[in-house]
Structures are given as structure tokens and as C-alpha cells.
Length: 97
Image 1 (cartoon, rainbow, N blue to C red):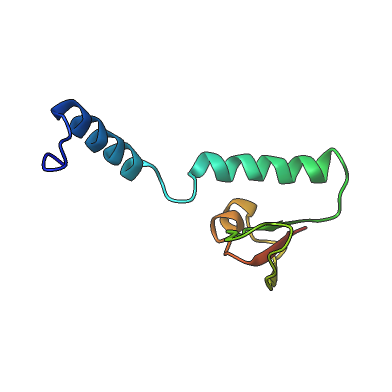
Image 2: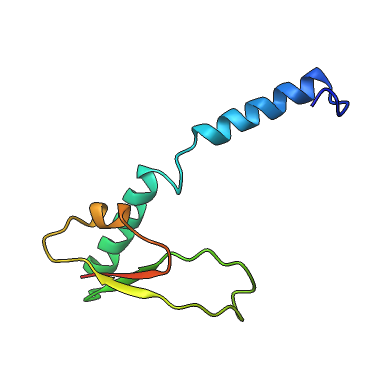
């Protein structure tokens, strides 16, 4: 970075930004799982929905025109939803009952 003409302050800031980014958990953290667990429970309890589905998708183009296929997985009755949320896969619709 020094060869590119960066100042010591800019190098320190870039290194700190990298350190912070590396310290973040991949794909969200337990708070994200707890948030989605609360959302699913609210859909069930407050709206009375018999089931809800979640899809994890990383788009590489325009959402309106991109095509893809997805598999389907149902969370079994005894499986804790937090555990199922932690096991979400890309391009898989996960149904919570």
C-alpha cells in the first residue's frame, strides 16, 4: 500500500476496516437467527399461518429477469426452528410448520 502512495493514516484505516470485516460472523450471527425465529413465531401465533417458507438466494443479475431452480425442505415437527435456520442453504425453500 505504501508503494501505491498511501499515507500511514490511510493504511491504518484500511487495516482496521479489514480487521473489523474479518471479525464479523459469516452470513449474519445468532441475532439474525433469533430475529428470523421471532418473525416465524409471530407469523404462526399472531396471524395464524399454518406454515411459512424462507428462500436464501444470492442474485447475480436483475431480480425480475434472473431464473433459477430451488429445492424444497420441510422442517420436521420436532426440529427446533433455530437449528433449522442455522442450516439454511442457498436456493432451497425451507418450510416451517
